[in-house]
Length: 166
Image (cartoon, rainbow, N blue to C red; front, side):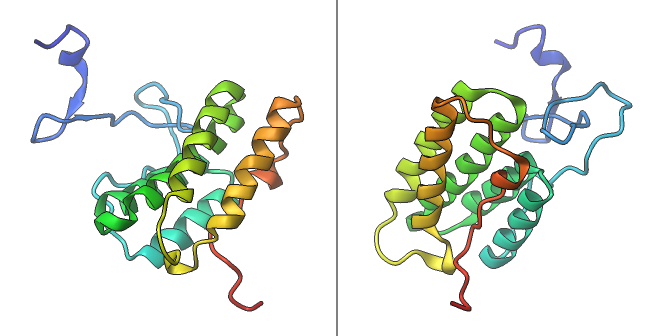
């Protein structure tokens, strides 16, 4: 049975909750009528390399929440055997979002989940995704956060793919 708050929620044609409110750079909802950052389409379906390129660009701009939405789109459209890997990448971006918002507990939780999912991928890692580097990044971020060391903006844009020029 819907609650009174459900009646006010944005819904798509299938009844799934949507939120058309604008959002700030950190993904927090703003009041209706506010100017926020451009939203990522809910039905995003890109080639994996395009998703990684766009997500990296968003991370580099400090838009980890939007990077998460791009990576979530890839996770929803990827082959089954890649789902945990893409979920881990999306969770890594959400962990960074929590750091940006000052939510250390949330960041630690999401980094732990990201590590488990990225590490669970069997076989060669596709699309030049730097799984080992991203796991090391998340582990170091967790160590720093537990020590009370703040992460600078430049530290919140890990490289998603290996540098193939090496």
